[in-house]
Length: 254
Image (cartoon, rainbow, N blue to C red; front, top):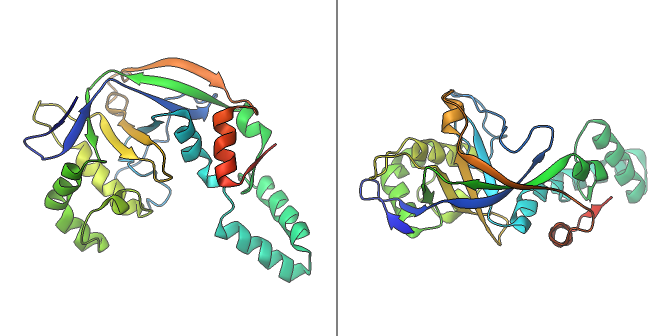
């Protein structure tokens, strides 16, 4: 069921919802890194993190892989490091690439361009179901974007120079802006008298829907949040959804 909140103007969808989450098996599916309130650098925060704990789910398996593996794509930072090493040490490009890969591996980084076997071995694909609370702010809806412009547009313009909130704002890399929006949304009481469970949003990599769920009970030390683990599965090299995303990103899987 969908609707528009009469008190905030935000569009919502009603649950329950089912989604997929990739997480280290040693941590389990519901142990995200808590975020601290107060001033500080938010560049390492995820898109709709707020002070407290936020769990992200994808609407389908491919989107879960796309969101999780984006960090392993060959990016400018890695290409620049390879080019610098080749010039500095007079190495062929492939030799420089191998040197940088070994250096990044020693430092515990996921090397852009390839996915090590131990990444798969240490993680599970969880299928989660969230029954309550039932309303989720729908950030794919025009009504929600219009409501954000009315309610927080002036503050975003003053603080971050964002004159108009758009889908580009919500899928962009400005974590100060997206987490400020999330913080405001988390505190809104909807017209049914309840807070939203979280938000429904587009994957910024295309192709699917994602959910950000705020673990309110855990944050308030009131017990566990109403999340059911419906299934958990190992990640295998021959997983069709994994290989589809690897192909999109130009990654190799070891």
